[in-house]
Length: 346
Image (cartoon, rainbow, N blue to C red):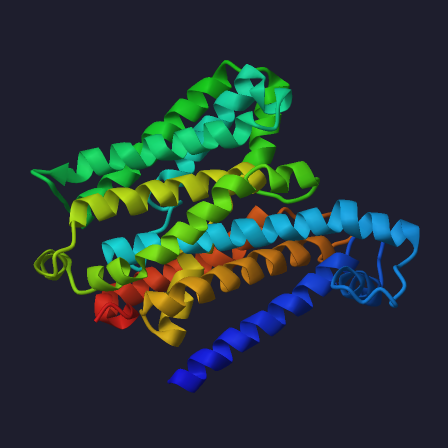
């Protein structure tokens, strides 16, 4: 089993590097993969290796690399959020988008679009997206809590209710918006990485990276949650406080992620569950493997969208929906037949 885990991790790293190289060369203007490798080696200190031609260098540095890094950040963040939610609630169908956190981010985004803040300053979309995600997760937690305890069933029901409420608020805001504002928001909701520049990537980093790192500090708590809340209490864990912290962190990194790309579905659902089946439920390994797997999945989806029907691009949110929806249906059917024991929650 240990060899299998190491093999999965090494395979993911190799595949991620291959897809990064392919993504750097794919687009309206093709750049040979060797040009990206030359740039990479030169940046690593091999000064004897000549840089690629100036046009190719500009394309890689100012167009392709920001897009690649955006995909890596968003994919990792959403996958980590999914791992945290599934581990916290011991449910393979829990994820930030399923439980309504992403809808809160969308509400923040539509407010930014409607008020003109979306175009005014790059700081406003991520701030409002985080505020919306935090509001959604806070309401879900408050509604599902009773006498200091939080029920999994009521978390899911509250998530559905809050998601419906926020979707209704989004629709109401759009009803009184200008046509170009409606078009801008609808285009954003499709989820995409085209046009990402360094400012879109660097702005969320001071919040996104620490938030993702903090989740790794809760691997022990997430493993204990797998034993059930009663066992967690008997082991001295502050269960409700831990839940609040993990929910808040998940809301922050989800809000930051969707502020970069727009809502991208199924990454937080599909990736954690897939790797839980492959390597087991130990969050010490599941968290880093899912982060790499989420980055690989989103970058591959973006690459598929670019090369499928050139010169047109299919937005990455559409690709992940097409790939994720059948898997979600399969997950529901398997969940019905096998229960939680079929998903690594023994």
